[in-house]
Image (tube, rainbow, N blue to C red; front, side, top):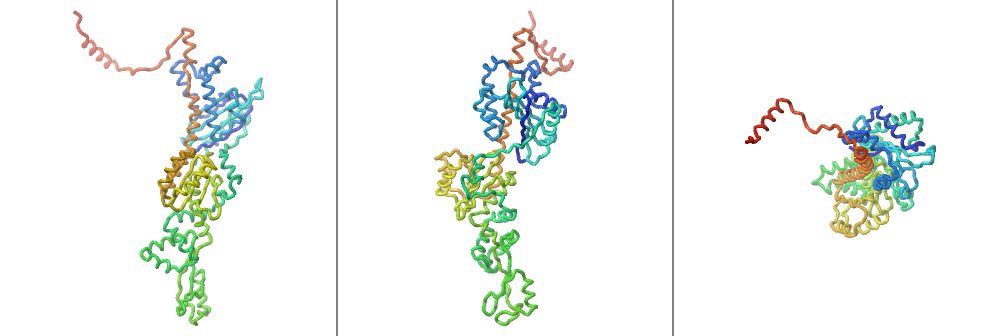
Length: 497
């Protein structure tokens, strides 16, 4: 499952307390509020009601529980840090922590969890101009598209009953550094991966095979090559070579032509795209320069490179396309990926904005050595990504890892020593980034689940009317078993003398 967080937000002109009525209506529509349910269970154990837990505090209690306010601030800051806007300019400058409310729900189809939060953004005396930010979201399978839509429709219906309008906007979480790179403010050699075509993505997948790349490079260096000459170079691998050539033909990196070879001079007399053309020439009476009919001369298959081939091989562009394809499969759109297209670049650079996290890729179709690590370290210092991938097709020198252990960059390093490891490693990292975001959201709701004991117990203790709530603490035995236990106990009692 590709874990994701999808959310939408809206600015409401109302009091945050309106959330209570909203949750009431959602519950009537089948959305069971889990935080409220947990509060009811908590109160049933210690005595009291859930309202006692969520009731307002007086000023004295606020001073005594300053830690609670600071925890609320930190929860909001943790989400603000990963890109969620709450509608105020600077939370750190607030003298009063905004009111936080929310609840969790299971999605009806079991594909994940839904949540709704309301945070006060401004409050004026009288309450007429109060406003708050509402956010509804889904945590679960990225392929699930309907749960959040239906949830927001239920919220809209509930708000309508309270005469509150909501204009929803999808939360677009972007990394600031990535935006600067995309706008060309730092590097003009970067272009959006949206420019990579489906044909190029397909061709790159074929070139991931080192043997296929070797054949492609041989033909590319020659420009054109007789098929039999290619087979002569590695006669012991003829069957494999035929398979590699076929793969290149299927993705249109090579195309096959035919050439008429004069048996007398050995020269290439005619070069045509299909064998049918030679047959037509023979029927029309076309002859070789030596006087023989074209049909009597030797006809050889010719391999020619397509214009796409040098583009894919130059600067290891195929590696960039491979990473883009894998990121796309993990629901990272091409619009969130930048590829370095600088001519004659020794190393390929690629940047991706994965749910607000800047990830940098260094791609090399050779061993990655210490010299490469020095230049990579400089680029890491310039762009300051949260994660940096070092991807090599022929291994990574141990000196590289030792180097980054010594300098201790703030960036987390990820090493991929061959293409076989790339897909699994990339999947693990992307899932890790998204899991971190999920943890930040769940920590937000965990704070709401820290129910205090004092609001329930103190009023009882102070009024001297302390009643123990009914809680089942033991399992009732059948009468026969109970009688046997009593007889056993009496037998074990010492006789009184």
